[in-house]
Image (cartoon, rainbow, N blue to C red; front, side):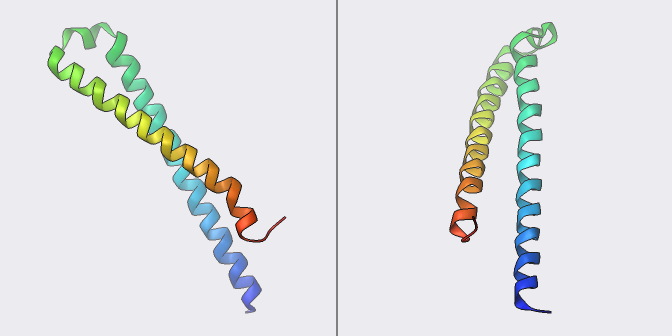
Length: 88
């Protein structure tokens, strides 16, 4: 098999892996945002131990911020990647 085909195959595989990782991050972000909404406003959350609730709120907000930063970095990498590889 020619090297060009191998390079294209490996590039396609890396792209699929990148897209799959990005999808998982977006799914995780959606879950964490739902969790945050529950902890902030659901009557069941208000009934739970408030110390634990505050801890979970803090941890969930931190995780959301971290995940958003990761997604932002993914977007920036995606914009830079074609230029770095010498594509149009």
